[in-house]
Amino acid sequence: MRTCLIVDDSRVIRKVARRILEDLGFDVAEAADGAEALAWCRTTMPDVVLLDWNMPVMNGLEFLRGLRMEPGGKAPKVIFCTVENEVSAIREALESGADEYIMKPFDSEIVAAKFALAGLA
Amino acid sequence: MKPEDRDLVAQLCAARSGQKVDPAKDYLLETRLGPVARREGFDSISDLMTGLRTRREDRLIWAIVEAMAAGDTSFFRDQSAFDHFRNVLAPELADRRRDQPIRIWSAACGTGQEIHSLAMLVDDMAGQWPDARFELFGSDLSERALEKAQSGLYTQFEVQRGLPIRSLVRHFEKIDDMWVISPQLRQAIRWRRLNLIGDMSRVRGFDLIFCRNVIGAMIEPAQRQVVENLAAALNPGGMVLFGADEDPVAGAEPLSPAEGVAGLYALRNADRAAA
Image (cartoon, rainbow over all chains, first blue to last red; front, side, top):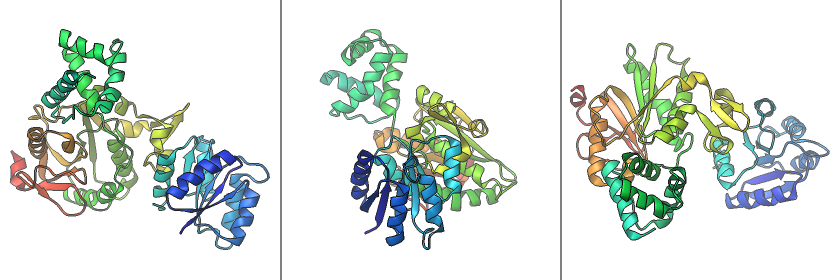
């Protein structure tokens, strides 16, 4: 089973996303910030990361840049899931190595569509 | 809704647009007709239907028929169709029609996601065939849908259904909470209100027609009419792409299934379209 790491400081968002991703057939793990997520990836590299942007300790963009420099860190698909919806932010995420981008609020249909676009259908 | 009101809506849709409406689907009828009643100043769907019977206004009839015809849509809906267009059909057309425009028509374009998806693909491929000139057309039965299509303005929810994020940032601008497709792509498409079971004798000269998820929701005489009309609108060698599970009247003339992607049909006799 493919693993998805949900990285978001909101417990509610993690809970909602977990339900959607489990329905899509993923084994789900959770982290509350970028630093926790990076530590998790150093132990077990997930297949995909669903990533919030604004988080304490280490934000999503810092995590993504760090992840891509780790051994094997280019392999996971990274899908941002954030309230940051300006074009400049989206471009910055893509240039830093994001594969897809979800603008909150989201629902199961959007998550499924975006995972399909990232080749994770 | 009263049974006689549901039957009347079904009769009007069949007569005006060829659409098959199941009078038993009370929920669907009420979902679609509620906004029409509010827009037209009626207190309820029941009042709308009474007004329709009393006034018999053509405008009101069309408002109801158009509301019932609205379908679900999204950017790059059924990705395999667009992959086949990009990888096979577009290169073939670019090669075959070097000195003439390649004319592509989204025959029931609704709110424009299909034809805008094609416009994005064509723009992305422009460098591959510098001499190829694509002409894009969008038509729909619904004036309201066409207005939205022409505006190129979509909600955040709409642009997140099927549209890759790189296409969004390449081809759209953000305006407040909405996204608008670039003026260059919007202006590359010609729009027209068109009833596919109406007189289409002046609609001619297309190389590829997208008519997906339309005939499956039509009564059989209307299906035949649409297939005849689309076939007559094709250039020799032209093709029609129906929905993947739609059968344009069981292999009858004038179209026959083509290879490559489900729902693709070609003129059975290429000479026919020259008429």
